Each structure stands twice: as C-alpha cells, then as structure tokens.
Image (cartoon, rainbow, N blue to C red; front, side, top):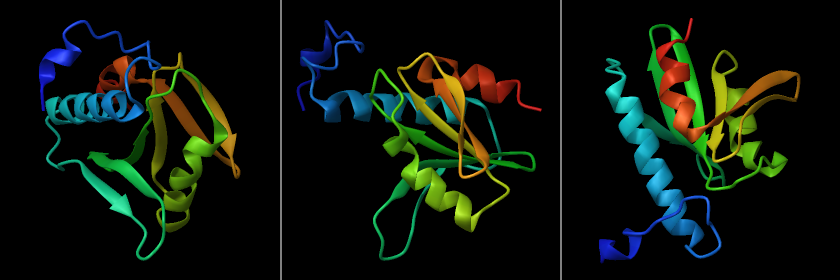
Length: 130
C-alpha cells in the first residue's frame, strides 16, 4: 500500500479517512503499546467458535487478564461492547476494556464494569494497574 496518503493524517477526522484505515492504525498502535509493557504473555485475539464476534486483544499482566476491543470512533456506543460481553461469559474473571478516540468513562453492562479508555492512555493505565 502507498503510505504517503497518511502523511497529513488527522486521526480525529474519521470522515475523510476510511474507517478501515483509522481502525487498522489504532489496532497497530494498541498492539505496539501492549508489546512495550514487556509482559511475558504476548497479546492474542479471541473469537467464539462458529459464531460472529471477536475481541481484538487478550492480554495478561501478572494474574490479571484484559480483553481489549479497539474502535475508531470518537464516541462510545453500546454496540461496541457486544464481543466483550460474549467474552465475559466464557472468562468471568477478566477485565474488559474498550479503547477508542473518546475521552473515556466507566460503564456497566450486565452487572459488570467495562472501562472505556482513550487509546492514547491505554499504556499508562495498564502500566499502573494494580
């Protein structure tokens, strides 16, 4: 691909870029941030067998497991957490994180908490976990 089209990139302008372009860059950024935390557990993805829905990253730090969904949206939408809800059914002790370009918040879904963390704060949050 020709990467020069990203030379004057504004990630907050999601209308002029394709959603796939921004989403792919954000996923790559999150993967780079997770690898820089030097966990002995490499990030993986998760999907339910023969079903739709997947989680972008499953990551562990010590005894804590995080399911991380990356979205290229400027706002939080409930539909973004459906795959995290499915993951939580199979792995109830995991911590759920939605990361995007929003300013972040805590939200409840099915009696448990999902953290919405801005993509630029994910490293800081995980590095200071616990």
